[in-house]
Image (tube, rainbow, N blue to C red):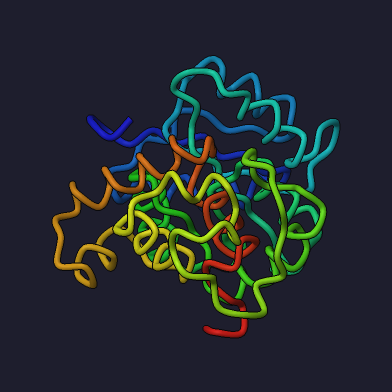
Length: 241
């Protein structure tokens, strides 16, 4: 969903937060198609309005943001991108939501400029994850099999990845071309499509094609899960950033 006006649902139990976000987004030409005060309202609003992006508070009555995110990201065609809103960047539910398929998170004290940029960025398929947050995400979910569908053996990522073509790597990674492995490694470092294109001297369209093929070959929902796989397999190391 990258054509036409950007459509957003804002879900937060504090009306002042919803109002503030709506005013900021609307002032920048972004269409807030619905607001929700709890998780159940958020799920219903998404089903009714089919937005591109959902700003989802993690702590809400009746149904929290984590379960609402899970219900929204059911694999149905045209599912939106979810940005988790939180007060603290170390909330355990934030990591659970990311592993469930959310595309990233923002602190509630985000600047107006960053909010607008984040909503526009995530619509293109990029993830809102800094390398530091990525490392903590992997540390929490890299041991229990959460966050990806590829299965297979698990590594702590404490040493460099083995050479391509050996059997000592996640079986699914053997399906990737050398260029796709390179893209996955850089993606895991938190690079956006624009940054990947500049680093690899490719067009953004070509980069998007590589990312799409990586997700398809590894049977992953999105870039967040691809990042987890990159760390778990030792393709990149948390200590190497």
